[in-house]
Image (cartoon, rainbow, N blue to C red; front, side, top):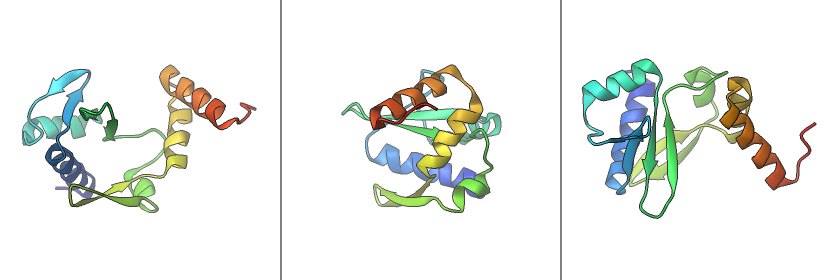
Length: 122
């Protein structure tokens, strides 16, 4: 299993142990241990969303605009979730990726993010 894929599986396992539910394409994802389905998600560059009962959400991204995995991993921060260390890419790179993607929802996120911080959109 490649490093990105093994990290994705570790993240799913830790989050499942923490009591989250998963969605893929706005549909419930029932079995995070289903290797066939996970392989297809990774192969297609799809994303999963982890939903916790407290209302928090975490997006698990298998692809990102503007960066390769190695570029994200080189300065990623490690977080511990349910006793498992998971690499998380830098916020600056996530924001840059949202700009590069050009998707309306990402551009709107950036607009709201900047407004919240009181930054100009120049």
